[in-house]
Image 1 (cartoon, rainbow, N blue to C red):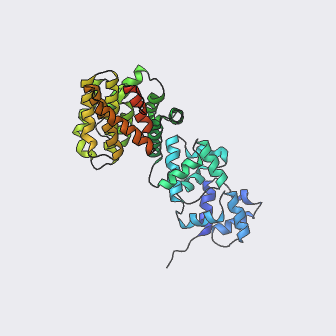
Image 2: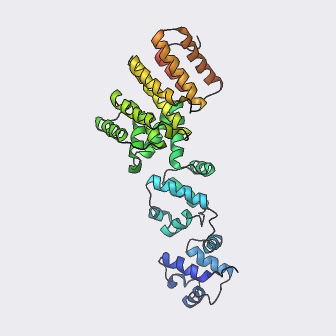
Image 3: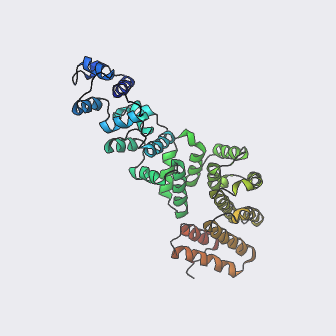
Length: 348
């Protein structure tokens, strides 16, 4: 037999959590009548109940779901919670938008849904677009921070500096992601000597590597000296077997190694470049075609610098042209590096 639901008792709990008294509803129903309803001794017509619930900022459908604990909005609440915490907002931070802490708890628990204009206002308060929120909902299990990583990857390889600056500014005030913020800062601006030391200590003290650490390593390795980089690389190579079952790990490690190699080629340090190219090679077999092609490009560049043979220049040209033909993610990255290191026109 289904358990009997005490509607009045649930109403009373919500009312008390909102710190509202019976007197606060007496313009709708007498205090005595509301007290009897909360004890389960009477019922109200739908129109009267709707008016009472409106005073609690609830509609009758949400009230039903709260009573039966049906989390029909679970994904909306879960994704929103992740965004709110990442953005550094408390549940009480939206009171000026007429959203109470209790309402926020119900929404994040998946029990109620805000009206469109209210949800939109809350998202705007956190500087999150409705489009980004909907994208995260469609991604299902993807977290806001994973979505940010993808945005950074796209902006970096497309050479979209304004987008990178926007991403950095959105993250700069969030203490919870200090090193991630510092990583983005280094992509669009100069960092101080103190910040370089902080990055060095961050990597040297890593015992366990997750996507977060590898992401930061991929884009911040350029701030470390060769000696410190080699220590970190040895640490990563020691943990190589742990990365095989993580699809994104080898890609980030390969791309990180390639970025370091390019920097060493800038300084015409072929021995240093060879070391970090070999580091990238350690993970190539476990990665995807995107990283494998990027590796082939940098390997060809290294061999061209080492030998001067035209066949390697031809390989780089072919990769550049293929990336443009298929509108590849890294087409701007290939073109930029070809122009920078070969100083030639790929159309020749």
